[in-house]
Length: 360
Image (tube, rainbow, N blue to C red; front, side, top):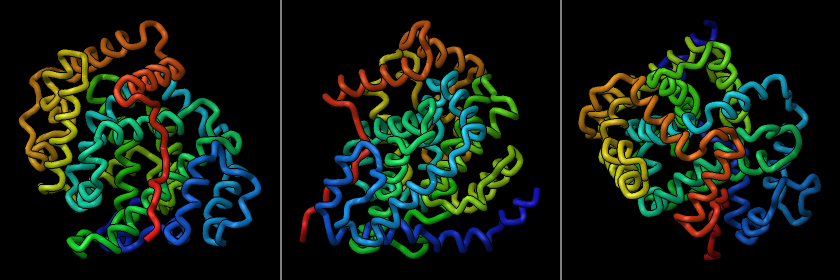
C-alpha cells in the first residue's frame, strides 16, 4: 500500500515532463552519425565489446544493457514466461482487441501515435512488430544471457527516443498541453496496458489468472520497464496497486480525441481485411467495445459491445486458437504461426529495426 502514496496528480504532473535522458542522448548521437543505425540494425545481439567509433553517449546506452544482464534472476522471471507459454495466444489476442485500442482512448498519448505515418499507413506491419516484440521478450529463457531480447528492448527504447526527437524538432502542431512526447507517465501507462489490461481482458473472457500469476506478470513488466527506460519506482507490484494506477491515469487522460478515433478506425479496417475467423471478423467493433467498456468506447466512437457473456467470447478465442495451432498450442507453435502469417501478408518475417535516417 505504500506505493499508493505516489499515485497523485501532483506526482504524475511531474512525470509528464520527464522522458528518458540516457536514450535521448544516444539518439542525438545517432542523428549526428546516421550510418551507425545501419550497423546496429545488423547486430543479432549487443556485442560485449562495443565499436570504438561509437560516441560516448551511445556506448553508455548499450553498456547499460550489458550491465543489466548481470542482474538477471531466473526465479523472478521464469514464471511469467511459463504463463505466456500456456496462454500466449490469448495474451496476444488481448493486446490486439483490448490493450492497443485502450491506449488510443487516452487522448494526449494518442497524439504521439497519430503523428507516426507508419501506424496509420502501415498498421499491419506496426501490429506485427508489436507482436514480434512481445514474443521475443516472453521467449523461454529470454534475458538469461546477453541475447536478442536485450537488443530488441534497446531498439524499441531508441525508437521511442527518435519519436521524441522528431516531434520536438519538427512537429509544428505539438501542443504543450499534451505533455512531453513519450513521457514517463505515458510509458508507465503503455506498460500497464501490456500487462494489467491484458490480464483484465483474460478475466473478462473467463480465463482470469491467479493472484500469483498476476503478480508474476507485473514483476516481469517491471523488468521490461527498467530495460525500456521507465522509472519503475512507480510501477505496481500488486493487483491493488495496478488497479489504482490505471484508475488514476484513466481519470487524468481518458477522453475523446480525433487522434484516438483515427487510430481505432485504422485498426478495425485492418482487422476486417485480415481476420479469417468469421465471428471475430464480423463482430470486431463490438468485441473491442465489449472489452473497452462504455467510457473508453464512447471516447473512440465505437458502437456498443456485443450482448454475450464474456465466457462465450473466451470460447470463440479458444476455438480460433485451436484452429491455428491444433493440439500444439505452446510458444514454438505460436511463434511459427505468427511468422507464417507475416510471410504471407508482408513477404517477410518482421523484425524490430531502427528507422534509417538520411543525412541532411
